[in-house]
Image (cartoon, rainbow, N blue to C red):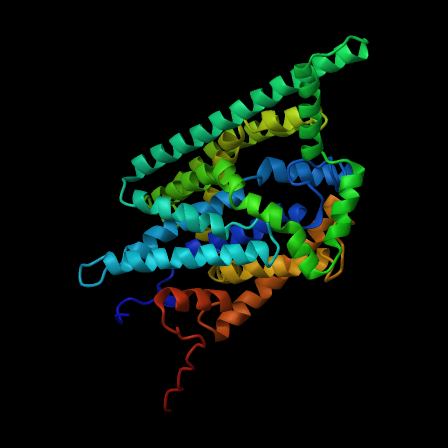
Length: 437
C-alpha cells in the first residue's frame, strides 16, 4: 500500500460531520429501542408497550419529530463520506482509491451479516449501506442538482410503491369484509370468497399477532444465546433480502445522493449563512411537521389499524425528508453557535466512533432485553425504554471523548481501517515529548 494512501488523519476530519453523526447515532437508538425491547411494536404500538398515557405521548413525539429522520441523517452522511473517501488519488490515478472503497464496503457487508445473525440485531443498517453504497458510488460525480433530482425520483418510486401497497391491502380488506358479512347472514360462500377471508385473516395475524404468538415470541427471546440465534435466523434472512430491496434500497440510495449534494453545497460543513440555515429549518419543519401530524393523527384516529398505518406511508417520505432537512439546519446552527463547547466536543467524539458506538448500543440492549442477560424483552412499557436510552447516551458521551484522548480511533474503526488498507493502522496516540526548558 503506497504511503500516500492512509486513513484521514484526526486533524483533517470535518468536525461538523462528526457532530451531526454523533447526533444521528444518539437518535438511531431513540428509534431502535422499541425493536430491541418490545414485541412487533416498531410500526404498530398496539402490539406491545401500551397505547395510553406516556406510552402514547412518546410515540407521538417520535413519530412527529424523529421517525425516519435519524436513518436519513446517517444515510446522507454516508453519501458525504463516499465523496470524502474517493476524493483522493495516487499520482493522478484514482483506481487504487476505488479498489479501497469497494474493499471497505465489502467488509461493511460482512460486519452487517455478523451484526444481524450473531449479534442479533435484525434492524441493523451496515449490510444495507454496504450493498447500496456500491450503487451510490456511480452517482458521485453528478452535479448537486442532478443528485437531488435523482433522489427525488427514487423517493417518488418508493411513494408509488407504498401507495400501491395501501390500495392492495384496502382491496383485500373490502373483499374479506364483504365475504364475512355474507357468511354471517347465513349465505353460502364461493371458493374465492372463502379464500378472501382466509387471506385477510392470515395478513392480520402476521401484522397483529395474537396473545399466544406474543407469549411464544417473548418466551423464545428469554432463552439462551444460541437458541435465540436459531430462532431469529429466518427473520434476519428476510430483513437482509426481501426487506432490503422492498423498503431500504430506494430509501437509503436517495438519502445518500442527497448527502452527496449537501456536502458539495457545503451545507454539511456549517459554512452557509445563519439566514440560509434559518430558512432551511423553517421550510423543512414547515412541510415536515404538518405532514407528520396528519400521519400520526391518521394512525391514532384509525385505532392503529393496519389500513391506517399503511395509509400513513403514502406521505411518509415527504414528511420525514422535510423534517430531516429541518434537523440538519438546526444542528448546523447549533455548531455555528459554538455552545456548549463540551457537548459539541462529546458529540463529535461519539460521531468519530460511530461504528463502535452503534455496535455497543446493540450489545448493551441485547444484554438488557435477551435471555442471556436481564431478560426484560416484552416486560417494559414503551416510555420506560427511554430511561435506558438516556443512560446509554450519557455513557457514550462520557467514554467516547475519554477513549479518543488515548487512541486514534474507536476499536472497530481501527479494525475496519486496518482491513480496508490491508495494513495494521496506528492505534494509540503518540505521546509528544516535552520541550526542553
